[in-house]
Image (cartoon, rainbow, N blue to C red; front, side, top):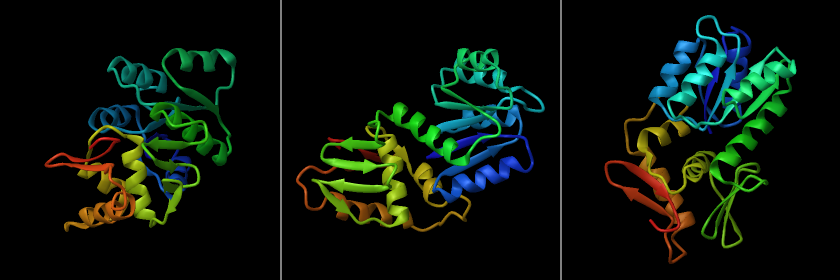
Length: 225
């Protein structure tokens, strides 16, 4: 998943970002409300983790602004305020879930998975289905025709990125960020090499091809490409 983490705490923010990256997610860390609004306007994220107490623009204002823009990205609010009125205020402004501090990192991960599952139309088990291809976002495995497909970590990351946006074109830059989060971006055709490997493993033995190319735009995972 590509996540926007909005947290101004100098210890908690980097710690959460590191933990999320260790789980295979792409993370952009914003430490102010303005940074968060700029990032959300420039890029598309699978979910936003939003702290309420920010040094400039408060979290509720950030949330309200994002929703007024027409951005439906799932938002998980983090807050030390645990009164019902605080939770209701966040939910009424458009938050999808509310997690009070302190919290378990495992619970944060579980709530994120649930939010993105609902937004992507995946089943309650975290499985995204495209024709006879199944992508298990919890177990991080893929199957086609009932048979498990052996994928490298980077191949799976690309496939999950396409699956979360199934039916939509995903740009080359978005896929590269998924594979090389925090690392230097390659200048070669390494992404094309990974996509070609995915096609061999997923499409080669089946008459209907699920991974399509949109020249100059990117790639798409769909029942009809």
